Length: 149
Image 1: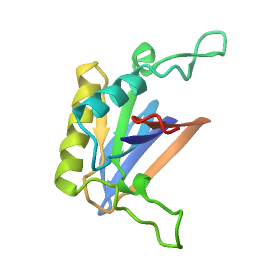
Image 2 (image 1 turned 120 degrees about the vertical axis):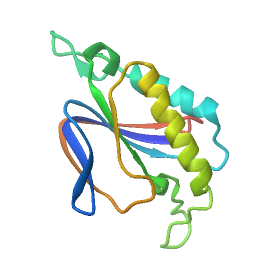
Image 3 (image 1 turned 180 degrees about the horizontal axis):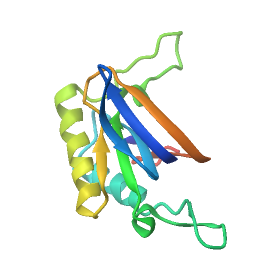
């Protein structure tokens, strides 16, 4: 499972000109699911993200987590995080999970964040979405449950 985590002042997702999810300060999380992923990877990644210390404390140091600040999360499914561009010019998505598995683990991941008390908004699975955000920092973290980076 892979995630691109962006610290945002605000973010929203629009589908067919309707806002389907929006947050204030917190994380925009683009989430990709691999065909070999399980609930264990989703739990690991949710815990890592919830406790990621990238918010500034009173001394201006990146020392606080989403849990510490009471921030929100906007989670958007993003199968293209498993695009392999090493050969040719068209990415291969052969390692991305199929829709049924991906949606199940996407929903499980969201549940893990909510179980920690984090307010979570979402995009719409398999929809063409417009994601809008105002970066804070900017701070962007790449995470992989297999610890490839």
